[in-house]
Amino acid sequence: MQQDNPLSSMQILEKMFDVEIAFMASKEKDSAILAEAFHTEVVVHEPTSVPYAGDWRGLAGVAELMHLMSETFSTFEVENLTCSGPPASMHVSCTLRMVSRKTGISVSQPFAQLLRFQEGLLIEATPFYFDTDEIKAALEVPPVAEVLATEAL
Image 1 (tube, rainbow, N blue to C red):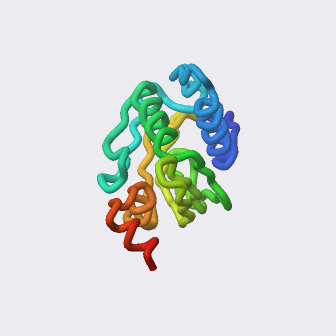
Image 2 (cartoon, rainbow, N blue to C red):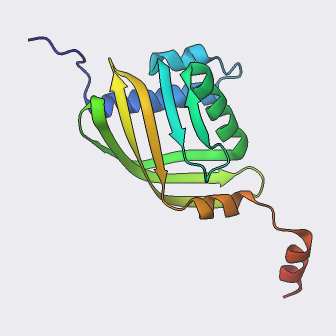
């Protein structure tokens, strides 16, 4: 019996991250790059407590999400990546390291997501950030009065 997808869950996951990195590094930000690892009907469910909240649908939606994330963070790195389960229902965990473009503040925290792949392409993603309040705080520039009071100490 021939397998539908000869790649392991980790290989599919690594390919998805490689495609994301290639997209982010590209000048054109052409959503066609994403088609190598993302299904045309993909949906990413970002929580309401992050600045890029909402359901991002299709290749164009994911391209816009990645564009917003790259405007928000100067660094977005995944460390200690692990996964379990088959591609149809994969559980992923890692340490996520992000640096705010606006403030330069770095955040490093546990991160998990549920991913579903169809024929080796991501069809659905639901991310879970450990502490969205920490992320939001890193993105906000404190009011001038607060900065002056801190400097006076």
